[in-house]
Length: 112
Image 1: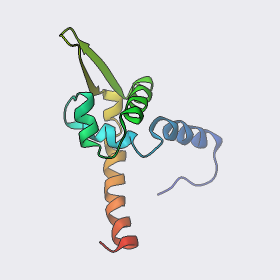
Image 2: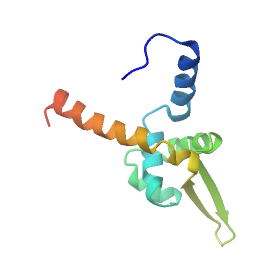
Image 3: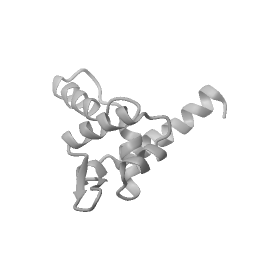
Image 4: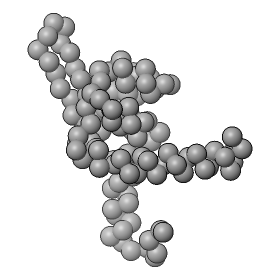
């Protein structure tokens, strides 16, 4: 059930949450990382349609919000790997609910 009324504290917390995961890519990136850590090109391949420039920007934003971590390994050339944090994993229920809602939405609107 949706919270009733326009409680300013509720509005602020929803705004903060939306800013952390806004856009069409961030939740998809988090979903891709939820199974295991990945390198940049692996993420790019799994999240089809995202440009390298956009992926780079989104990864930086997710890292700034402590939803993912970036680890650089001392190899030649350097290996960079991204993984989801505990804070990022706390979005699991949100992502699951969006998945189920998306299935219902697709069926209702598109009929598939």
